Image (cartoon, rainbow, N blue to C red; front, side):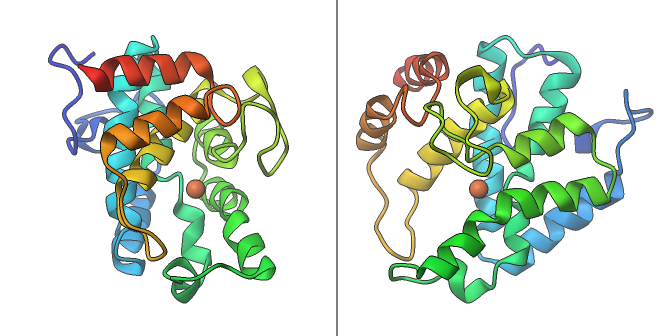
Length: 206
Ligand SMILES: [Fe+2]
């Protein structure tokens, strides 16, 4: 489908000409990405970087065709539910209160609802809902474990964590990439699917 590999920032779906191979509310996607750009200084940037990490990883994990296109959108929109979290909470430099934490954690469900409201394909909605599950079953919102979590979400989890670790946050400075890779490796099997981690680390080490 893309002989030259995936080019970061050149989104497959949004650049496709002619008929989509499935129903997609393209206008809704563009609107949502626009809202993310203006809502929070890094919501869109984080989404783009996560997408850029996910796509080559997904190719190496054997995803192809429609599943790959769906993953691209899911990665771009994985945090769209944060549009429902007040900006002062997203940018809070200190520790969040319990109420604030629950509000932030609710973004995976809110994101799923947003995408369902614009008739996004089921696989994309499901990936967004499950992107904060953990491989050991201690994540949210449903406490799914292992392969109960869609592969697409297991891929987004690793890319999401790596980008979060290697970028500055209001409450901490960015980690060097090699330190982030150590963290990802250390959390393999607990937070992350070991197969996805192996694939990610092998490629990132090149
Ligand atoms: Fe998230």
